[in-house]
Length: 289
Image (spheres, rainbow, N blue to C red):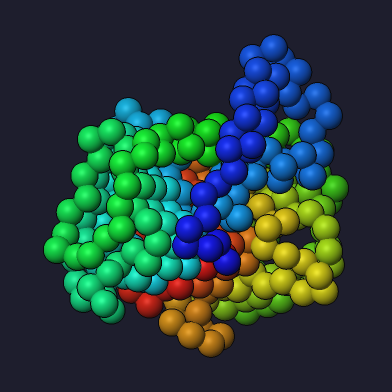
């Protein structure tokens, strides 16, 4: 879990600047490996964030939560953040010209347990108690955005290690080992996908990603920080189902959706959600890293 006072490392920002130079000179992804994908993603990864907006800032991207979140939340410049009766156990980073609005009842009248970091002209509204500082987190958020975009491109360039081209399960189970999977869709209806074994898992999904009482679970040494769902499709990624037990949709890993919106209504995510489009986390959901 990210500690409430943890700030993403400045050293990672410096490394990211070196990566950006490599991209510009055309030498960035010549030897891309699953390990290098996760290393590149690190400034935007779950050791730093639970929910992260990475839109380009030219239009307002909305992150709306009605659920408790454990970990840090990052809002890109010109983005909007709306929280209804949610408890954030971590820090909130509001980029330049972003806005936030809090409503509902929260314990101690304190919706953010850590520090709220404000960018230039960032707006924090709501009659609550906040620990806040105007320390300009936009550089940090921009670095995280660059990392997310670079990692997505690197992941897409990887050679698949499996001939599997889609996963479309209904009332079924499937177990997969570490590897790179290029899929047209990943759809689970009343079904469970188990990722079994230590190592890196990269799923490049091009068309549809949907969990309807579907569960993506880990076993035998697999960890959330080494599982990436690189969703490059434009349809909304959806999670639907109950609020507990086998009826609850669950995803363990990192969801990276640069082109599609994310809708959790409700569901359990252990890892992280990163999107360049709108993110909606409905009542009864749980987000934690």
